[in-house]
Structures are given as structure tokens and as C-alpha cells.
Figure 1 (cartoon, helix red, strand yellow):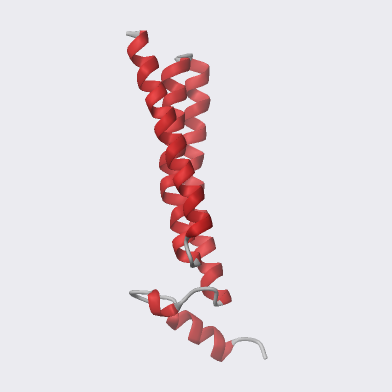
Figure 2 (figure 1 turned 180 degrees about the vertical axis):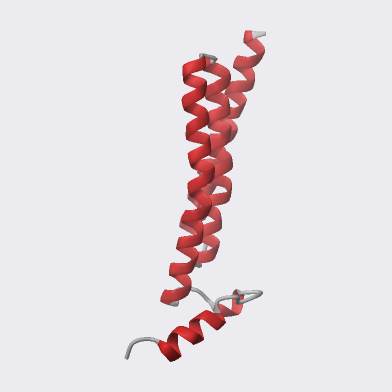
Length: 119
């Protein structure tokens, strides 16, 4: 049984590393901020979770498993918040092509800030 867990752990580690590599390539190659944001969060989070699963399958110690679960929870909690902040910063600084947006929910907020903002 330990041999099967070791092989599954190795598979998870390789898969997670490949997803992390794909995320890094996407951050370097994608043309705009929103595409880079998706490349930096979606495959990267899944890659980290696969790496953590692979480590869990290899270590099997209760203390290690608890720490790995904490890392997974913090990763799942912080990555979406970071992506939201990156997206808003790109929107507010004008570093994205507004023609690529399917829906622009922040247009009303932007026009309200412009009309009642400080002079």
C-alpha cells in the first residue's frame, strides 16, 4: 500500500510541477493583464494543491499533514483575493484593453469616481 501511495505522490508532484510551469509560461507569454492574472492564479493554485497532495502522500505524518492542510487553506484563501486586487489595479490604471471585456461592472463606479472625485 505504501508503494502505491508513493507512486501516486510522485504523479501528483510531477503534475503539480507541470501546472506551475504552465502558469509561469502563461504569465510571461500572455499579452494583457487579465490573461496574465488568470495564468497566475488558476493553474498555479491547482499546481500547488497537487504538489501538496503529493507531499502528503509521501510524508504521512500527522504533524506534517496538519501543516500541509494549513498551507492549502491559505493558498485557497489568498490567491482569489490577490487576483481580484490585480484585476482592479489593472482596470483602474488603464492597463487593459476594454474591448476585450464581455461585461464592465465597474464602469458605473469609475464614472461616479470621476464626477465626484477630488479636484
